[in-house]
Length: 387
Image (cartoon, rainbow, N blue to C red; front, side):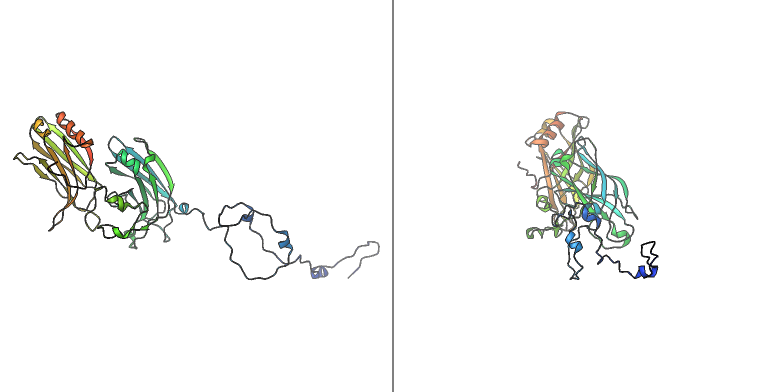
């Protein structure tokens, strides 16, 4: 090396000699992730909030076989429901009109299985119960992952008893028919216990969507008509056989015409009787005992529906005292071409009935020209003439 003069007392190193000196500090260690210094609460991982191992950092690098270790940083959000998006909607229980209103506003952050835009709609069901009997849906919004519907779905015949025991399920579904795709599972769903609602007070929600979970149907229920092989967690099929539907009737004794006006307005949540999961319902009326005049009526048939609207009215002549000793038998049937019609459910209004049926009959005959509308739960057994 070149040396400086004796006056300076220091050695001088040329640039070439400086670059030739081995200044490597040792083996290169991988840079630790900054996420390792923050707490993560994963029950299946050991705690990652720890100081670096000083001995491991000072030890020489020894090549070894790679080992698989759990990744403390999962891709995306650790909550699957958040990854599926959110749904904004409003619920209103109209107790005065026995109706439940569900307004679907918008969805955000939807994650369809295929890339690109998506055509979506919202499907609603009341659980427990037959899925098609309480199924309502919005229109389809095309070509967006941030759809806005602003559409209200209404369940008629919804009572306080329903609010206490039923749950509303909302599904965001892809309309595959518009793009000629195979029908897949919903993009996400959510469930709201309706017991949380306050009558006549609207409540808004903004809830994360979750994956749909299906369970295998018991073998004893596989042969039921109109049912799929899989069902929801609540086992709606078991409750399906208990409730046959409801009917909205109006009664009014007309002093001008001298008789009873019976209005068949609508039915909701009827039991499906056909293989396609629907029914072709109509209503029969019979005033018993018959006085020789016309006492039997029948509405028109509504095709392929479980929530038919009739809005038909029939007249029975007679004094109030005579009608009070009789019984009005109302039955709902499924029309079958070429075979016997299937009984769906029935109700009997008379002075020997009980509950809402008795109140409806007495108030109608006790007040002239007073129209009273009430919902009635259908019985699974046909009304008996001898009762």
